[in-house]
Each structure stands twice: as C-alpha cells, then as structure tokens.
Image 1 (tube, one colour):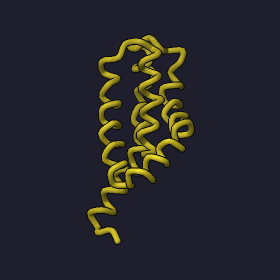
Image 2 (spheres, rainbow, N blue to C red):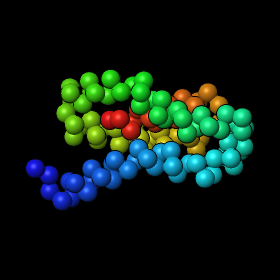
Image 3 (tube, rainbow, N blue to C red):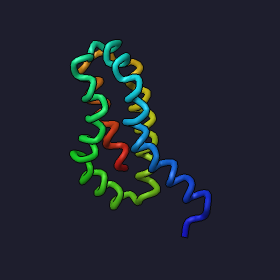
Image 4 (cartoon, one colour):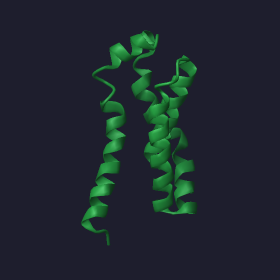
Length: 108
C-alpha cells in the first residue's frame, strides 16, 4: 500500500507523459524555426509517442527484470538527461533521435 507521498510522486511522474508534448506545442513554431526544422515541426511532438510504441516492450522487460522502483529511477534520470540534451543539439537527426528516445523514458 502506497502512502500519500508515494501516490503524489506517481501522479507527478504520470504528468510527465502529457507534459513532454503539451509544453512544447505553444512555442513549437518558434522552436522549429530556430532549429531550422520549420517543415518538420509536428514531428517534434509526434516522435515521443512513437518512441513509447517502439520501445514499450523493451521497457516492460526492464521493469520486470529490475523492478518498478529501479526502472523508474533510471527512467527519470534518462528523461532529465534527454530533455536537457536538446539544448546542445543542432543537427536535425540528433534532435529527432533525442525526441524519439525521450518517448521511451515516458514508458519506464
């Protein structure tokens, strides 16, 4: 049985899935233009969801193998790292790869 603090933590983690797409949408035209990706702007929102679909079975296996708490720790660390990585990426392929992998961290 989870305590109130545990329930609150799980709700916060669940919000990350929504935030990864919703936070970027209002500024998407400006972000895409600054990155030189104005024609591919919608992919910046779509790729994390595609990452969940592609890498979901792997994440499920990892959760079974390591346990949910350890997988959550690893997922949150990678989620933060991949979220920040886009600051230093300038190549379109790297940016799209980062967004795809960011979706995988939503599943962990």
